[in-house]
Image (cartoon, rainbow, N blue to C red; front, side, top):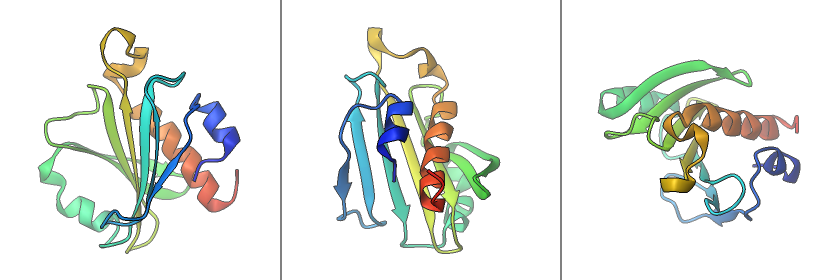
Length: 141
């Protein structure tokens, strides 16, 4: 999902781990909170539903719900759960690929005294990750 060059550009030194047991679909994760990027990120394919339609149908349940400009030609939305708003070190972006498939991108930044400068606005970094992933999926990386 992310090439070695993309991981370097995102400053991620950690190795990715695959999770094929997630009930919503296959996922990968990188835990680099103590590395140079100071973040953990997860990417999942939401295959058990109706793509972004499912996200939109639940928009009232999110702490922050914000449609975004297309990412690599695909519709996207910030959909941060519960009381999170994307301003406290975490952000989730979902990208619609088909009517049955969405790509879920989650970034959690390190907190505390070592928190990165963008801790209070994590969503722009999450958008960069989502853009890199969609480039890979389109075969452009």
